[in-house]
Image (tube, rainbow, N blue to C red):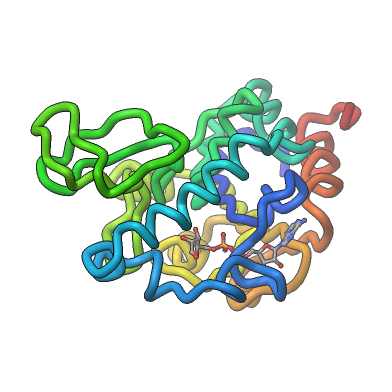
Length: 235
Ligand code: APR
């Protein structure tokens, strides 16, 4: 592939696994020990906001202690040196792409953000959030993590669809393809004849739709793939 057009990259929890942050659906993943219905739906928050806050406080502490790994840095390097736009779309809420110097559309929100369920105001989240936290704009005690829960519309979808519409290559890295709409991006671009590549530690639910596959741990195979693209050494 020598033409240098826009590349769109979707990342998932597998990219942050080697930074010490658990994935969701691996054997020791977050959903192995916690029920989605109890912490990651608007209904769960209405039912027991303290339980939901405890779950995201735990994840926020872990993310604050985590450092980006070689995969995050390599993707930031590709954004910097590729002679066309490299659009990073992430399902991750840990902020590690930005910590590595990259720029990502966080379609599932961010652990670092707080959102008022009453007026929609957004602000930086304290590490520990409680149901008593008040909105700095409307004063309501309806503060929630700025995370997109199951049954809610992801963020930046119009922008994401536009990028998927004019890219030359679509790459999915470290995602199981279990959650829509992100899991459908690959099939959508493949239908339009755009080249697709899946990079993952193992085959996924959507591997069949991809033209090419690279199997391996993100911190090893992503820097090598970026180096090959940039015709440079992976250092
Ligand atoms: N390198 C590359 N891939 C890895 C690694 C690694 N070191 N470790 C795990 N993986 C792969 C797994 O094989 C799996 O296919 O990463 C994928 C992680 O899948 P999930 O745990 O399902 O995470 P993700 O696809 O990001 O989940 C999507 O689901 O729970 C919701 O909102 C949450 O954004 C999340 C969405």
